[in-house]
Image 1 (cartoon, one colour):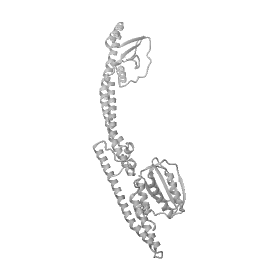
Image 2 (image 1 turned 135 degrees about the vertical axis):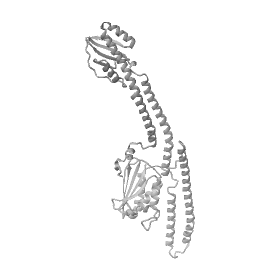
Image 3 (image 1 turned 180 degrees about the vertical axis):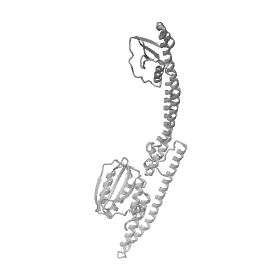
Image 4 (image 1 turned 90 degrees about the horizontal axis):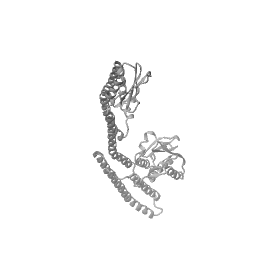
Length: 441
């Protein structure tokens, strides 16, 4: 079976036309059948019933005019009496203009099929030149007819040609449509509001922002989803709190014997063997315990706040530069970014320390990316990281250096993901590695 070209697939074409929001698509489900129903109603009324009645009314008026003219031609001496009887019986108004010639005029346009129906009936029934003036005297339609000795003007009441229920039908159709659309919009807004709040709460919780439990509202399924989200949010909070408390206790229990060992080493004679090596090992163990605790704790209980990201980058870069690294900054104007300042400081510190450990030159750039993101790039001229290892270095305890613990990039990725962003490694123009950090504003 031959597949359709990728650009011509029907579903892809429909996705470009259809609204993307749930409110828009649900409203479309209501509006399309309503429009189809109105189209069928208009076709039945306007295309058959109204058209038939309009032809019959126009034919009746044209027949009465033709009858009056035939009587006037047959009895020219009784013309005035014939016109008077017609005015009384048919509610016509006659004006005779002797010696005048009829000027040809275009067929006027009126609402509905009545204009064409009347013109067709007159051309069929009269057999003589005529002209219609639709916007003549108030409430009348003027018919000018060429007779042998002049022009006869007949004013026909509009009520003889129009159906009284026509305007009522269109008013009813338009009014009910507006009422149904208003009810549908109000109902759908109430239903979609619960889903929108759930989506915003899930997005905020995924970015580490504690907005508290949401109030379930809307349909039963939406309420159940909101209640389930509140329970999940509570379980995740309790799990994180228990994990942090457990690791803090483990850290405290490990640091106690390490402190006793440090005191015992301090009490040894100065000529004891390898005191300096044992002290270094204890310091390294304490550093490892602090790193493990920081990785498990993540960003801790710090709450996101609008932060000047450029100023934060400048502070971390200045601290790294004091260690001997050469750092160049290219920071564009950016709006305040909602983030955890201390957690992001830890991320930038880890990234710059890694770059300074393997390179001598570091370039940092930051700018706005689109409407909702900020892009940070850290380039170095170090040896770089092979493409096949760029995903592995983000795993805990994966280190490309014998002196590293393998937790720096893992902590950075964990914190950035909690902010709703992402981090990746690319080739740097300086020859080393480029770290790209994307953060939502």
